[in-house]
Amino acid sequence: MKTLKIDHIGIAVKDLEEAKKIYTDLLGLEIHGEEIVVEQKVKVVFIPVGDSEVELLESTDPEGPIAKFIEKNGEGIQHIAFRVDDIEKALEELKQKGVRLIDEKPRYGAGGAKIAFIHPKATKGVLIELCERK
Image (cartoon, rainbow, N blue to C red; front, side):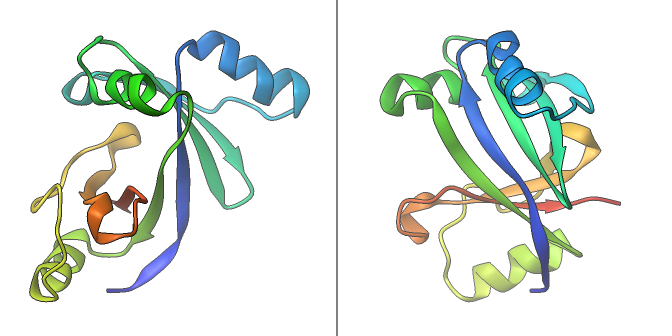
């Protein structure tokens, strides 16, 4: 599996508008894209920082994964995403190594990316996302 770079760091927030101000007003960064990903029950904002991005995630459903994460852990870093050149190949390699996956097949992610998650029990508690962008 060829990992190209850190694609983004996902941060779970309760209030997206309030969180955006931290990055724009305090740090002087710019928002580059906002969307709702219905399949994941989340509203997402992208903030480029160098070659990577900060991804702010607000749940659109009290039963969504981000709402549950915040309920259990509070607001903060939810996942780290690594960009790969071929997500299907990367998932197959991980399966062959016996790595526990949340997603055995890629699914739609924000920004049109193909994404898949590795189970945090396989990575010492860190939720890792694989991300392929064309």
